[in-house]
Length: 242
Image: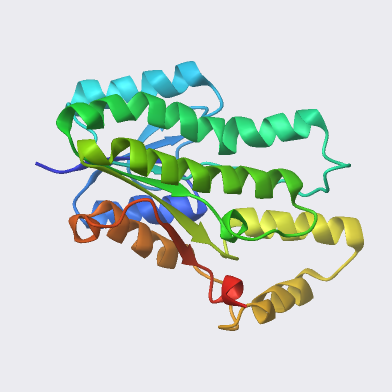
């Protein structure tokens, strides 16, 4: 019987790479996203809507009878200091990045607890560990996800459930390119030059790729990582080692 995994935001970027990788490893993968794309079994779901998340999880449980792994990847980016982040901006970032993960775990943990097994991976960021300028709301949300991984790991270890956060650095995804383009539109900077500057900031001299993050996530949800829980797994080309 194939193991069952839910991936949120699996239609693009890191999420799509995770879906593809887990399918290759024999999982039955459900992609919770707003629009279908790529592989896996698509389930339309707005992660900011508790009712939709609960219904989507119920559909998976009804069909499969179990949930072996959850990868909470859906998220949005927002640039701004504390003063120029409105309350509406903060609410929008937290509604997806933090509350979406909270809704997902509240809906899936009872099934994993009953079967006394399961693995949770939350997509944090290098900003789960360090601060970055002009990133108040996003930075705050990623620090919250790191905390969520640790507390969930402690609260559910007795049920055989593991929880970890993967903390990517600068990864070449559509989200990355959109953020850089917005910066260039505001500042007049040349995008190719900004891309080169971003790559040069990494000790390994390049941007990370979604497939590299997916490989780490595949390890964490699998049995080979059965003694890893409550950890923040950094994959950032050495950026936070400075």
